[in-house]
Image (cartoon, rainbow, N blue to C red; front, side, top):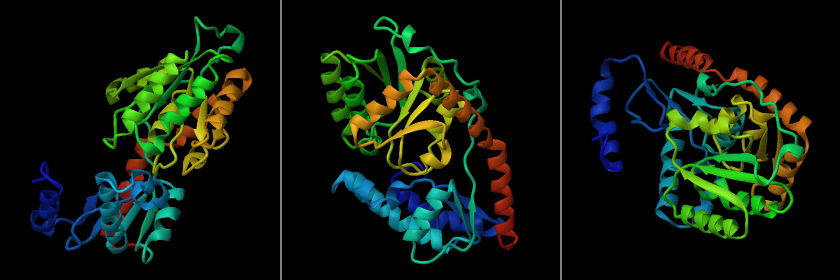
Length: 319
């Protein structure tokens, strides 16, 4: 049933889960939705998209939009009725709680961590004088192909710089199934035909993803809706200078370790890339600050704080 349709999974939660949970101290549902008959229970808020009206609207009236609306309703109900609710950052906590009918009972903010294999020293950047058409500056963008990830705007930005700075963009990530991937591929084809250096790697396995960061010299992150930008944290941990969207929790995570832009304005993305590419000292400084900031995002800390919160809820302690 858990490998079946949404209806089968919901039916499992309302029947078998309730039965199985009779003899446990607490049920932990990272997906954010579980049966209200299960008590005590802790849920997590891990997807901000259902709670951002502007971003949901990008999908029009489509199956994806319907799914997001159902998630928003189901998670909202669970967030206010659960015994404990975990957020991944302060931005998500403020955005989601403002949309709820009443405050959650107990709340904790516990960020995710970064796998150790992504951790590297800050990069020693190549000066622009060593960058050429035969050895371009390697730019990486890792993310699913989705409307709110703005890959088309990034492609347009890279294409606009083709006669100014030798850049080579690599896009990594699978499609979100909305049809946006087709739009990205058309934009990429047009940009390449005009002389831009852009390639699309498709989906790369998580076990191989760290190699993509190691091969890059500069990272761009153009998402306008994130709950916990794990990809950006991986890029920070890999010692890359970052051009980043000025949206969501990104400034909370990245701080002054990046150059920001409006992800819906290709000219701003281009300006950020130009600034980083042209200033070797800025790239070095951003990478060093990023590596230092990301040290606080540890899976050990995440596990410790999560189990501490679960214990508090199970024992009826206030937090």
